[in-house]
Length: 479
Image (cartoon, rainbow, N blue to C red; front, side, top):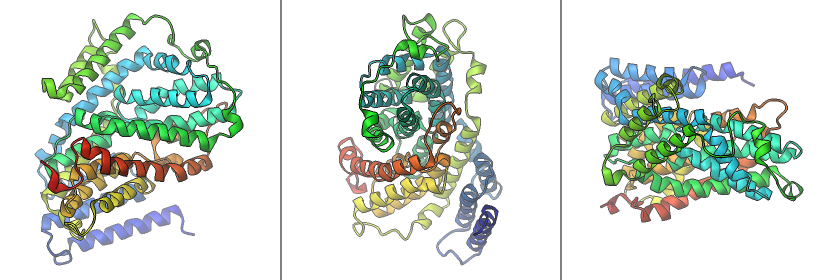
């Protein structure tokens, strides 16, 4: 059997061979020189993401630099992506999230919900609801997983005598965090990449409210279905019997901040600020203020000496700068794919018009996006590779590119097969020895149920509910 190093070497050799063939004039009829260069860089970057342990951001920056040096894109195009408002939206959202984390509001909100649970099923779904709400307060799934970890450890302490329930909760937390991210535009960096590609390639702009309208119902349904799947695949009937009693006192033992009682002044200010920011995001069509500007105002207030709960420099330390650089570089790659004609050429073989039913095209997109985490572990990298191709293929097939891109991005939220498939899954798989957690076998058992379930729900939404909300399936039916 080939060693991992040998497989990587073979993969890189194959990538270099493909890139060399792409650069040969005449080997790619109908593709311009810039298109060949773009496709070669794109292929090399994708193979490096898949087959090497080199940092994803380093690879993306190298690809962006190669496209700039060769003249496929200008330096202004490369650097302007860092100033894109979606990047600023994410930066300011992380500062706001730091203010929320500093006050301990997450623990208080969790205690308010889970202490009302009297059965195992109630505990499961109340925990799911609490995790779903965090999508509005904390950007990126890894940040939410880290914020929720102390809450899980407190629950594990309170349920120490019921081991299988602790294992179930350990699997429930990352599962819901990953699937509920689709609720909001700031739920994952992949969402911002999708929005940028749709604007660059299809001229379609999706704002915070539009994403919320389409993504929140999907997040609610998939999260609670996943909660049932986790409950049924990790516990036995005997584990689910009996009442559950989690008191605020038991949770307080594991928390450094109050989980009950009146809100502190800092907590009250933070609740008011966060509620105002979310309200302004949701009312964007009324006041026409960009979500990025709203987030910037919120971040300035959250870090102000008089009203804030976190210092600006402390809030900025929580920003995942490698992710932002990765997003900026991959946005530039997407722009190059579109402007050079490489994306259109790459999907030129997709049958157009009515030769392929729209439902079949969307089903293929959802299936590929669901399985893509087995090859590309970074969700942002998956969107960077898939979305430009999906948008170009959708236009050629007569399918609404917005529906196809959203379906692909939502389906990519499933990444539960292996502990290394996503950072939240890895985080909750590596807990202190005193805390029981899931095994790779538990993940595989859940994935066998959850993969077809989530893919089916995404496809159902794309074909039935989203058209009612203004995202038709067919390109020609758009107003």
